[in-house]
Image (cartoon, rainbow, N blue to C red; front, side, top):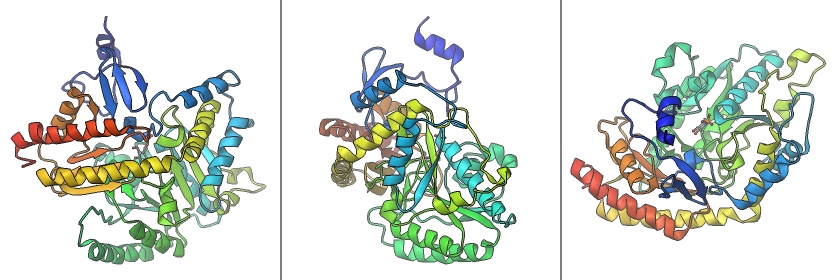
Length: 441
Ligand SMILES: Cc1ncc(COP(=O)(O)O)c(C=O)c1O
């Protein structure tokens, strides 16, 4: 039986309606920004395999770091034991993160890193004798992952209606997306900040933390925000003694033009969630990093005041070794210069695209380019996204629109020629797929 026949019999893919979706390509290998299927076809990974592989696929230096570590130690439990890869990686993360974000708690994926941040914030107040502070504040249309706590704070993204009964209440505040040529942005921010102030003041004594996707709401539709807006909101929260959690699962490790979004915004959150780019997509790993102040609240003679949370694979040595190498490469190989170059190319392409096609909310930040094929009214009343995705696949491009938002988020090692291939593909798709639907005239 072929790979696909066996896949159809036994594999249950994420976010997939198996009854109607076409068969996926069978990927055998990868190199840089390219993936190769079982027939030798090349597919450019223009979304870094769900935003992970900042250094591209099968990078020789990351491969070597993994090989070196596997000959030494593959895994040891992290409760009651420690090991050099975790110590080295934690030290490096603390060095590159702003302020005193020094205490690294590892887990396995973005959702667990969020779940951990929520639990730490919740217990922080209990340990301080303020167990009435149980609420969370989150942005409308936020997405923070798929576990129950993460779904609760991400309720606004609209993906989780089937699970409403499982989710806890969250105070939602307005988010203000922006794009090139958005002339009303200051007025919209001013009005939102007024509402946010009211929510914060009314809830400050009951609230454990505010959770934020800084600079870019990812799965909620690639919606960018101005750093100044996020800073105004987080300052307001911190001034009112509310903990601030930055969910940098998507934007961390250079995606938006700075190593971390908090650096660009000029805020030191109390907790930061990292995953995806943490190991450049090599191994499932996440980190929730806390400030000294947060960590200290868990120190006590009483064992119950410790953070009694664990995952079997916490601080896996293979993942730590690759994560450290990936972080060193981001810094030593001046990858932020590469991101600036991608940003410049994206901007030039958007100008060209806008000359010929009707697109909404064109926007670029760091390595991320996005635009909408309909106005952002929240409605997605056609199957243009799916039609585009299928066309892109058939034309050797992994580009997966999110609702009516088309976006690129390539690995930083992408070449100029590969970028041009993706841009040409978008132009062609606008003509061949959207024009017949009257969406790109
Ligand atoms: C901002 C953000 N938080 C959390 C998650 C969840 O991460 P994971 O899919 O690794 O559980 C994602 C995933 O896309 C994300 O974009």
